[in-house]
Length: 157
Image 1 (cartoon, helix red, strand yellow):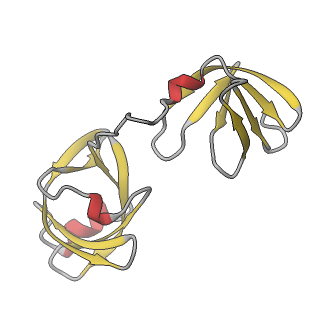
Image 2 (cartoon, helix red, strand yellow; image 1 turned 60 degrees about the vertical axis):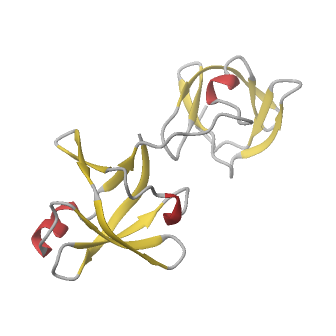
C-alpha cells in the first residue's frame, strides 16, 4: 500500500474531510476502490461516497462510516493509504540499485547493500546506514558506472 493523502481537517458537520494528496493527483484516485486508514496498527477500509476537488492537490471527501463531526475529528491528521499498482514498464526498481556504489560528493561512501521502499521516502543501505534517496540530495546517477553521487548531510555516514 502507498500513502496517497493525509486528512488535513474535518469539513462541515456531516463527516466531510479535507484531504491533502501526496506524490500524485486527486484525479488518479479510483473511486470504486477502498482507501485505508490505520486504527490500532490495522488498515480499515473506507469507500469514498463523494469527492469534490479543491485546488491542485486537495479534495473534500465523504467516507463510508464517517457521518458526524466527531467521526471526522477522530481521523483528522491520519494518513490515507490505497493499494496502488505501480507500473514497472520502463521504470527501474529500487532493488536495481543494490551493488551500486554511493558517493558523498567525491568521497566513496560504499556499496549499496539493501533497500527500504518507504512510500514517499525510499532509502538505500550503505553498510548499516540508511540513506534517503531524496531528489534534493542526488547530484548524479550513472547507470553505466553503477554509481550514485549525492550531497549528504554532515554526520549521516
